[in-house]
Image 1 (tube, each protein chain N blue to C red):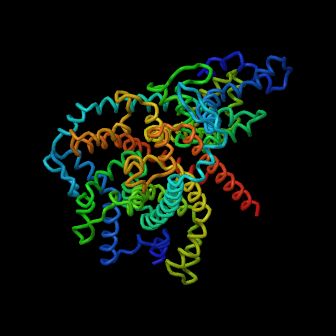
Image 2: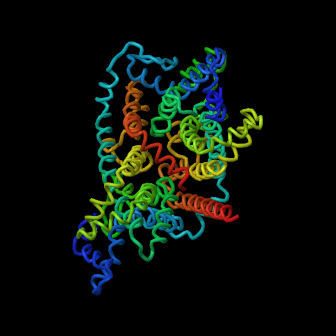
Image 3: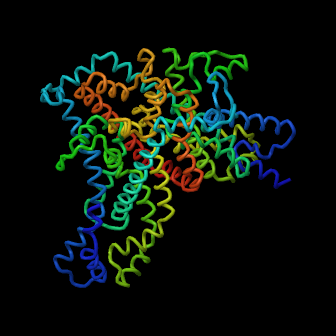
Amino acid sequence: MSALRTSAAPVALPAQRDRSGSRRTVPQRLGRSLTPWLFLAPALIFFGVFKFWPSIWGVYLSLFHVQPYLGDQWLGAANFTRTLDDPDLQAAVWHTVLDAFVQVAGSMLVGFVLALLLEGPARHLRILRTAVFLPAVIAMVAVAELWHALLFPGRYGAVNSLLGDVGLGPLPFLASPNSSLWTIMLVQIWKHAPYDMVIFIAGLVGIDRELYEQCSIDGANAWQRLWNVTLPALRPITTIVLILGLIRGLRVFTEIYVLTGGGPGGSTESIVTYVYRNVVVNNDIGYAAAISALLLAATILLTAVTLWWRRHRENA
Amino acid sequence: MRRAQNESLHTVLGLQARNGPLALILKTLLYGGIILVFAGPLLALLAGAFSKVPDPTKFSLWPHDFTLGNFEVAAHRGVYRYLFNSFVVVGFGLLLQMVVSVFASYALARKKFRGAAIVMLLVLATMMLPEEVVAIPLSVVLSDLPLLHVNLIGTYLGMILPLGAWGFSIIVMTEFMREVPLSLEEAARIDGAGELRVFWSVVLPVCRPALGVIGVFGFTMIWDQYLLPLIVAHEPSQFTLPIALRTLRTDDQVGIGVLLAAALLALLPSVIAFLLFQRQFTRGLSVEAVGR
């Protein structure tokens, strides 16, 4: 907010004369070079205080046994070596990675099929698309609460009664450690597939219709058209959506916290819910900070590899 | 004949052109199934919220004994207080976020200065630092703000300020502002307009569609916040609606109908925002997918 006041008239006026190339005094030149920074100041302050400083502070905290009021105790790398033989953390990492892969791949597959089925300019298709897209705009908490209500209580829930009507089930869904993580993935796919659908439709619209025409002149049927024209054209979008989704999947928290709280029996514990548990239940901020720092490092590494790979591909 | 063939080539599968009786039945079944899967649960939620005693063991798409009673019980449980908190956070948070983004984008898009590339890199880097990753140290920082030494835990500001700058809206806005022709700006400067004047009355009005995009995305982003209010709110009176839902569920005094009513209130604002600003939504999505 401070930039709003300071960047007013005195700094701004000289700019006009500069452009016409007349002589500049020192304060005018200073003012001109200062202007962009005044406009940037609020954003940089917010990022600095609430993003960058906490990241640095987190690495610092991870080197201590953090004890509010008692004074922190230096541990060196002990919190990090502890991560190496923590079976709970290893389980959480495995759940998180598995969940990221399955939900992203599943959402893209379902989203792609939806895009193929609902693509087109017709009015009824547009209305259908709007209805299908709704899960994607709803807050994740509401989605999770809604599905919790539909899947509860265990074998007598609403979804199971519906399955019973068609002669299936009952399935334990969230109640069993064998199916809880898969159920969460289904909920995630339900929410994210419509989003992927819209992105795929945007990609489909961009495909040159003459290519389809050419295909059909060559006697290709719809499937061959899909395989030879559509899929190659969508590949760049697909890889971007896939990688961004995977990176985003590493920090899954809300849906797991709401649907299962990490249970039953730790079967759905993710990295971030485990971090949260370490703070709230075990009050072990240093260890939680160490895991967060590793998660951050993994995110940065994956993003860097992606950027490098994209540039590499573009140049090739 | 030729027209019909073209129509079948509008889409990959050419479903639209198939209009035989069997194709129509199959299409209806297919579309019905899709709607049931994706919109059905939402209709069930709507039905449950207005049912007197929703039967959790039945999947019902219309209310059973229509009533508004669930919303009354919800009021006694402070749901409207939570909703008010949510609106305060999203209202001030979005205003702040948009102002900050627009200022930053103006500098990044319209000014040439040393360090611009580094600033852009920093903005991109913040996209890798979501609340989930920095939550633990962030809660420490919020309890003792650097330099100012203020404790923001348990305050609205603690939920609002961390969302003050968002990399996504800065990037979207910067892309749009780059497109504004320089001639417009120069004409205004010749008329003696100052920097703020150029920003406010020349560049910003041209970018109104982009304001819609960052507004809608910012709204859903702030409304979706879960972990941040969870670590900031200390007492129930400070809860936002999303985090209050979980305590409401564990409260065995309230039935599932009340919970569904509260969940409906929690998802309605984003649905309304989406339906009102559909065009901006799709535009933002394509920026997100293709632009990065």
